[in-house]
Amino acid sequence: MSKGPLAEVDDVMEDLFTLLKNPDVGEALAGRGVNVSLAMVIVDGLTAYLAGDKPRAAEELGTAAEEIAARLKVSAAGKPS
Image 1 (cartoon, rainbow, N blue to C red):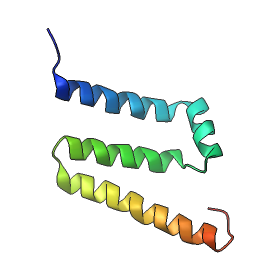
Image 2 (image 1 turned 135 degrees about the horizontal axis):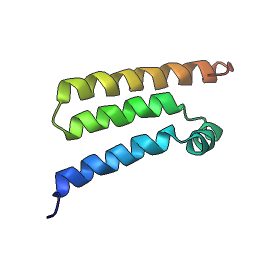
Image 3 (image 1 turned 120 degrees about the horizontal axis):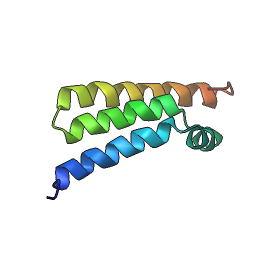
Image 4 (image 1 turned 90 degrees about the vertical axis):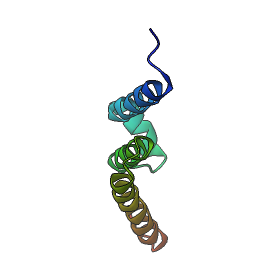
């Protein structure tokens, strides 16, 4: 029996979260200047949004957006993020 399209989306999001926990992926992303913990917050927010939990999605994605903006300001000032 097929799981259905929404279950497949859940599986993809879970796989993405698992990938972000992989040290090799984390190292590759760090080389691009990506903070893995912050990426996990974004995945959590997107997962919440896709599940229809808009308040949690807004909280997680808002937190991520604020943190990214703050890190951009720091890096623009010539300081490491």
